[in-house]
Length: 110
Image 1 (cartoon, rainbow, N blue to C red):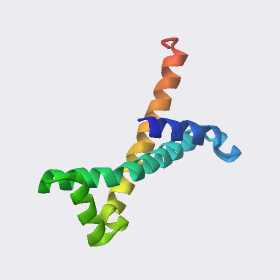
Image 2: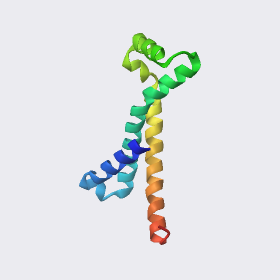
Image 3: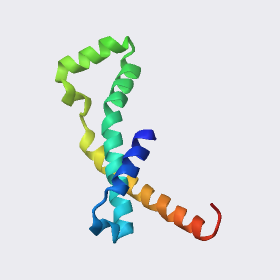
């Protein structure tokens, strides 16, 4: 969550003027980019974890075997569809999150 929130806040502050005039698009695109970056950072760890659970054994031996069989790209095998799904989901989530914040602040609930 820390990677996502830090990325989201940085992107939101540095969004170009054209996106600042369209906050709905800005929130969607910022959420998509933040989620994609976060998922790209954590996906290799998830791949290693799943293989470790399936095979058993030691983590260093598993990491060495995966890297020898395909290198770093092997850790991202099958990542394209997941990236698209996660990015769209993250964009929607951020859009709903920001709209909820706006609603609650306009009602005086925050």
